[in-house]
Length: 287
Image (cartoon, rainbow, N blue to C red; front, side, top):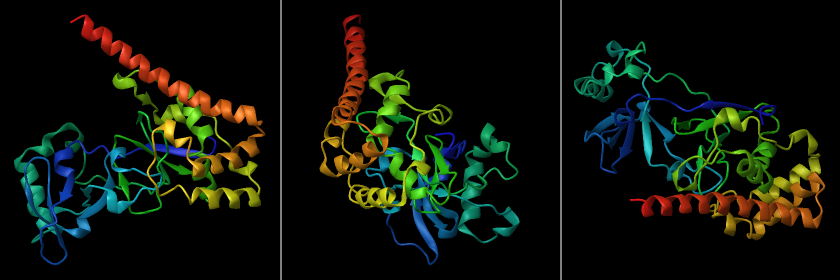
């Protein structure tokens, strides 16, 4: 993966309850949006300072990230206070200072504590924690931002973005993540961090000829917007199988080897979940 992708972490805000805001749906003044935060503040902020953000992968049900399904906006302001006179954004910043957010370590180290800086557009999200569902969310919205609970990545070959998005979501990629990811958290969660995933085996886009890539994209479009199912159900879906068929052809796998990949994925998922349940039962017995 490191040969074909660059990976970085999402925003670390230092004060999530200040920076993440949820639209309330209430009427607002022209050019503003009525929002609230987790600390109990509620009011208006100019829309130019509120950007779409994916805070948690739980907000994403499909392979394709749909901005309309996301719950939060993130406060993004790169202006000095002197440039914000008369704005709702300045009032909000002053409210934040009254809560002493500017004194927090991650905030006070910035030139403007409320300025998170710029985040480069990204092509995909790496899920740090995976349970029964395992996929790589794809982003086609340049303005979308991401929080630090996840890693985001960009494909090095800008002419092969679509092919790489497919490669990252085939069952072979899921198998590799289950095989090489870490199982060290409660509930049997699979942990995959950015630096680790760069060492995962991946199909290089150069191995796809134009006709193969065309077929892959046609089949990818059939499943990219539907919900991703738990792996036991996912690998039984006809659209999933049709996509994998092309990938397996590229890998040169026999019919038996293809079924072995599916069986191995299910076995690895069940093994980590069963182990977590066994440890939970032991803990309960020892209380």
